[in-house]
Length: 378
Image 1 (cartoon, rainbow, N blue to C red):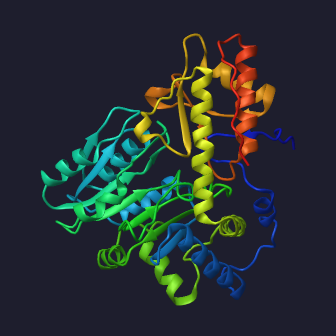
Image 2 (image 1 turned 120 degrees about the vertical axis):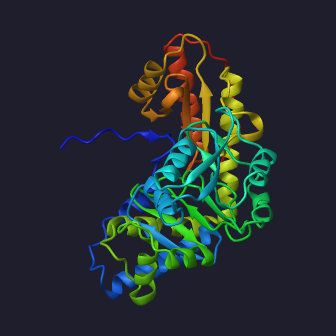
């Protein structure tokens, strides 16, 4: 079999995976109905609670992040439920569609791509609509490189209807501030292949006690994504109801161990510092940032193409000549925007190699580029 060359993967997920984590997948296969698995499972739960900053239950699905987001919807939203959702990109549009497919009424608070709905706009929509079942928020909109900046203010607002607070943190948990319990988040969703720096295929969710009670009292119409079923198996035997992706469990466990060794606060600080260097350096090169300064993501850098620089040629040259992968835009932003994933194990080496490769690519393509010096990073 022919394997592709090793790239520096600077897309918004999957991202670079540390060697230790890749090696962990070589552990022997074990019986998922055994004491060996139960030890792994319990340890994984505790490490995930640390990253979520929660004492709540955590469920781990063998799925993409999208599968876990859909699980949050089908387990909570029922026909006729009103669900408030800020919409400012492809992933929040997709989440609103999931809510509608589940029979809910998605009350959208829209903002132009590259910006976010303000807290005041969301609060006004909440006050103008009675009996809101839940507020769903895509914390970090991967398609536009924006992040919602007011999540710490939501808890008190939702007290009127005792509404649920659900956060899609697929592309920034572990790389941005998100104290689940302190911010009153009922369901928080993430995925292994982003800031956690593990291979794709595993998606954890944290569930508050009141969210769990609702799901148990109102069982969802699904089998594989039935979250109370997972909790039942966890409580009875520390097992999963279906066969888990064992190798990915071992990998995620090792990735979470690395996070503990670094320290969660230090990890979040590193993501922010690397993002700042990307933003500052690319602006000096002459690139215009897509996201507004007040709501720029710490984990996904989105940039506009200047006139004369063609998307496919730029990204393919960067990949073929320098083995650095960046992402294009999609949906209505296809060909207009390109994106850098600043997540996972990203550090000074990744930033400097990416920036120097971009500079060389622009020179090869005879594009205008300004010389810039990358600040010192560890």
